[in-house]
Length: 271
Image 1: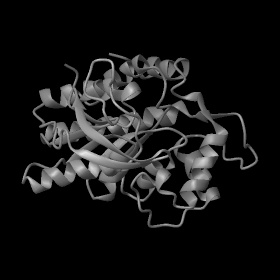
Image 2 (image 1 turned 180 degrees about the horizontal axis):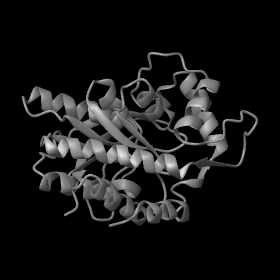
Image 3 (image 1 turned 180 degrees about the vertical axis):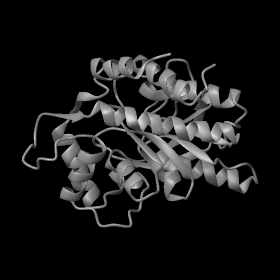
């Protein structure tokens, strides 16, 4: 079993927490865009409150441990590892609850190059616990606005984790999927499941639009978020997202394996 102390050391060594690669300028830009309700950073969330830049900075200081100083405008951002550990424990509690009642679950990621393995390990454990790991709408087309204009992506599943693929790209071992922040994929998945009269998830696990899009629709959602992803933390503050775990979401994929082990141990789901 991976101890809390060992995981804390790993978080710092892998730069999942502590000083992270996310630039302060990038985080502050996201807060400005969120305050302006730019859909690129809302990630499918429709906040009830009016969130100004200072409000968001205070929230992110509380939730993530970033500097609350508005005059700190350049350099590296930082995440408090204690907040990451607390988030992972809360994340594990939600998984354990879903496993205990054998709830249907959906996994989805906008960071397949980095986080696919983390979610795939959880999906295996939830399936072994008797939960239905849902995979609806495979192959469905989703039109997503990008900086290059509207592009058509394809929904797919790898190891029962939903993701989108670039136009013209089919499943292969060398192409895990595309980076995506949009809530449109989870909306398409839920819409197709509902239209087919199938089972809807009681819990959605993922990041970016997968979490915020599901939470906005009233489905319990938990996920991971970086310092430049204020939407998940606003969603948590407003009760739309159950758990948002602060960590760097773009380090090497193998650095997330200890997190999988830790979460499964905490949830009593280790295989």
